Length: 117
Image 1 (cartoon, rainbow, N blue to C red):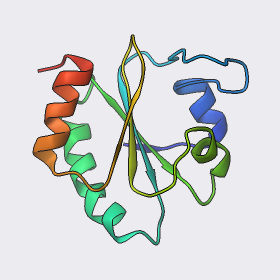
Image 2: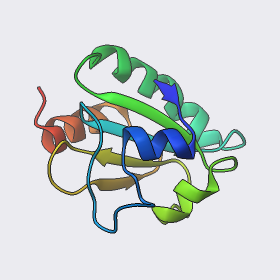
Image 3: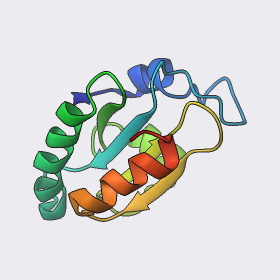
């Protein structure tokens, strides 16, 4: 699990400055956790995402974007509440989920959105 800046987001996930339509830049499917340090549910979700990053190491990248320091990315994706999770598959459109979802729901989403078992 890696914290990324707006510049890293444009490089590793999607360059929203150059592209008007979604074009994923990653080499593996990714989950982007839009969070804030002051957010209680974000703090509860963090260890779950850490577990998933180990469980799906080499299959799924998990990035964290702090909405307070990286407002540009948050605004681009219309993040209005945290935590918000962006599921970015290798092909197809990304999907957004909100809230501190339980591990079982996140595993189901990884399997369904990314087609990973």
